[in-house]
Length: 81
Image (cartoon, rainbow, N blue to C red; front, side):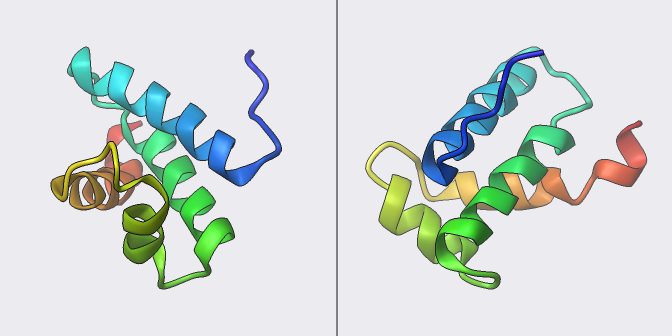
């Protein structure tokens, strides 16, 4: 199993890459990497500041809808496994 980076920004990008791979494959199990993304955003910017942190830190290469997609998919965990 690949090792998740210790740096929260690098870890976010690692989880995000996994999330995008699963999304592209239409996998129903996007929740796990989406949860990882949300957790890393909380580590970087604090709980409740996830959207602001995403915009400020990763906004240059992510669209506005990406946060909503991550939030939605992170909340589907109980129903996907």
